[in-house]
Length: 314
Image 1: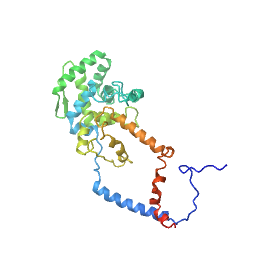
Image 2: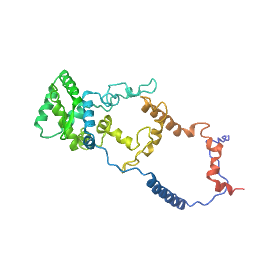
Image 3: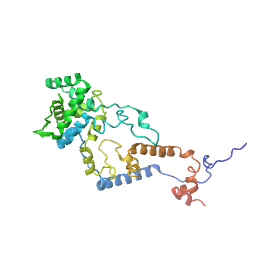
Image 4: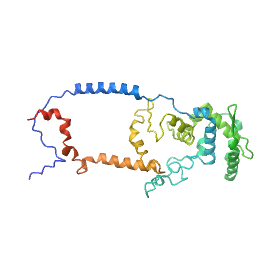
């Protein structure tokens, strides 16, 4: 019994003629053309090779922004402190319709802003007797005592000042917090905080979750992005040298953030993720979707691609 021919699945036996094809020549031509275009386009549209943004640069160039952001990490008012999954359970997190996907994922990357951004980095400083005593006082205090210190420090921080490179907050009944926060400020300005936030989970690590969250909670990073035209409403993109493939492949993701409702929804990230999953599934399943897989054959686009060959046929 002869099996019926299926045009969308079975490849018919080719009975026509053949044409010579020099793949080396075509490859060299392609490389030359792409190289020339790369050079010309990089001259016309090249992005600046700016240095990495560090907490040291942040605390030096925008000290008040760093100090107020550190305060928000202390009193739990920062974006990271209230983000929810996967960092904590402070909120429900983003959801896709009735599906609370962030809640299902849970606290996979636990972040305690007080301990991770303040207490643990301060503990890494060597030979600091006064600071060690303050940290011991903090550790041994009750939850209510800590809450009282944080409240009193936060109220006095409305008048915080940077005097001769020192963070000054005239707070009363704030326990060890004035000294601890001043030491954290100095730690940031020396660059030690950058390293402490990266190496909290081990000496050799490249996990930049904590410093990135800390930076994102302030306004310094967003202000730089605004100047570089890299905010979501500006369609900007920058590729850092040495981080291949960089962000170029993210254009399809960032495109959806310009479209309603993703550009205003609190669930924008999960909505974009859902769209990309559907598009990716469609791409992977194209050979199996009737009608869609027939488009190349029915549009006869192959005759345009191989037009030289078809011109030689009678």
